[in-house]
Length: 213
Figure (cartoon, rainbow, N blue to C red):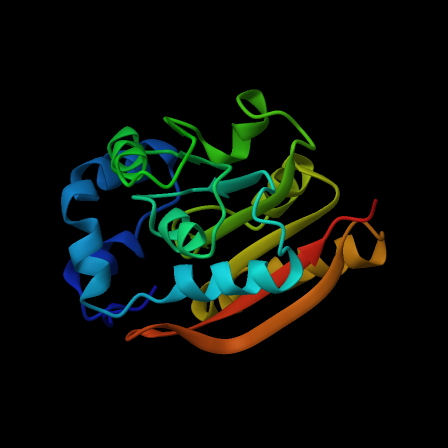
């Protein structure tokens, strides 16, 4: 990876240079948890609000059972709460981040110490009307294969709402994974917002998938 800065915020820049090892990612976010909301607000992090509004377009039922996968401090849950959703669960690799999310009051339950790649061990498969994962498909965090894991947690007929940072999309085989799932009819693409606002550092792609019933 280039030595050029990815983010104008030092903490965010360092997060984007993680190596994807769960222990290293967990330790970094445990240390960052108390300052995370301040740091992300300093770069106008608007991905949670955009993702919540996208979900509302396709799932107006506010009583739907939702999962925020990689919930961090709960910014997505807060935005969902503003739209009237109340049955929201979350998990995060970092225990400290999960505690912040629970303290937000937006979630019915939050679990920390959950590795997304093994989340089926703690969360029932095909259990959720919609699964959201915002700010997670980014460099140094999870591989594109995590898409398959989250799809398995989504009930037939349910929705999957994701953001992918543009540099993550460009440097991984995420599109190939999507194409394979589309070809196998395991997902349907309902909407793709390309190069949409993410924060001051750059753009992201926002995806809304449905899982065929």
